[in-house]
Image (cartoon, rainbow, N blue to C red; front, side, top):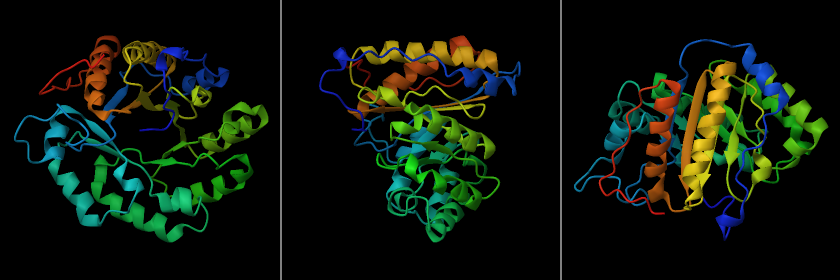
Length: 295
């Protein structure tokens, strides 16, 4: 994940911003004493990227990956709409408790920019539906130049979605969050349609850490910098998520990216260990065939 990459991560202030004041208000509507649903994973399962993760001789990468993680943020679906039988095959290869979080096809988000995209949207959803109950929360990633002038496209797009599809959405234009009037309009729309406001934590785009939840779900795309600070940044997220759990957070979807992806399982294991200790969860901590802290 090259987005937000910087030359020297040591020069970045990685402190998480304070919560938006309305985040607590949103979570208070869902307050519960139960443990959160926790899904942690990488962005891809390719052996070529996750070097040192797979035991020698591993032939089916997804089958093994799904014994170590309970979810995958599926970026491959951004580049093309996979056939229905491919999704069905992924379903069959993975355990009952495994979940997929596929990115919407770029023809919907980037080429058509959420407008006049019914054909691609219907094909994407129809094929992805072969994941059945393992299709947890697909997400839309919008391009950097999709700014507030496109706000009128949001509601018609959300209305096109089947009622059982409630995605997360990632905005990358800074004015969605840093123009107060625009932000309030945006948050109102997302809450109205129960759309989760994805949070991106990456070195070069600290402006995207809006810390404003619109549902009882924290969908976090964490991009490490292959730097020793990656671990302390994850610890800070554990602290923040614990606060949100106390306020009513129900779901944590946390996906780890790296500029050098082979570190992703290591960071994920660190996060899962800390989460199990603090949240009372019991996720499997991924094994590494060739462990190396890298830092």
